Image (cartoon, rainbow, N blue to C red):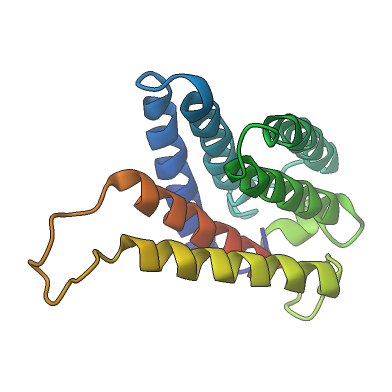
Length: 183
């Protein structure tokens, strides 16, 4: 995406780690949980690939069209799966956000030139849509963070460590927030 190299590598590490964790979850779940793990693995690994700094790898413009197609298909699958559970609506929003970012990067001024280092004042997205997605992910991150706090916690040793899955979802939400804010 846009911006400095270090934040790009941090996003690669965050997305890659969460995507790999979700891939590992695939073997232990079934049904809707397996589908959610697959969606989250795609999202995390996709975030990692899209965040690679352009100084290291400046993909050709058609690559962004490929990303948009992959996440467009994921959005359609999430829309279909939303019949069975509201959590799939979050996956739908995430997939559509990834399509939006890929399309913005494919536009002139985005892509390889905008991937890692175009001028900070040059915007590749639609400010209103970017703002709405930023607001969605900000609320999602705050709600996810609050859920990680054990009920009745009064000190650091009040409860055992929370499950890793909610922390993973929080990390991916933070990654999306960072990627959208870099647009």
